[in-house]
Length: 123
Image (cartoon, rainbow, N blue to C red; front, side, top):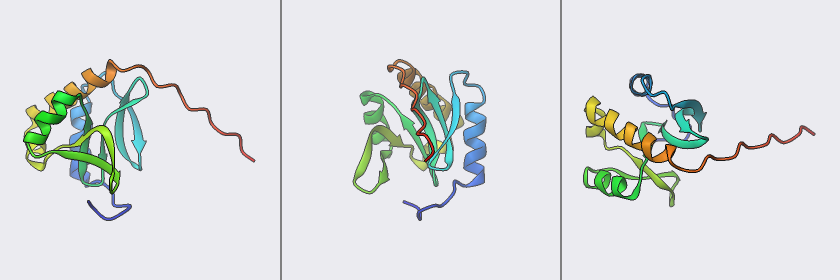
């Protein structure tokens, strides 16, 4: 994993923006200071440093693992259960990348909506 606090490369951010441009279900936000997309309040996909992460079902995780993907960990040893880091070779295949992002939206959009967090009052 890259050094703590490292930003995503501009070319990866541009690719992320271009793939997400045609996705009407995308709720764009920042996660850990990086671009991310949500559906119904649930994380779907996002960048973290130099990695592109997608949230997919069990079959999708198995298929991605066969292609060289790994579980996404925000902290070493603490993986996000349904999130995989796409392998670098997949990032070079725009069609395959768009299909995985669509699959992530299809899966995550079917999950129950996440309740909005209440903001804590300032002291």
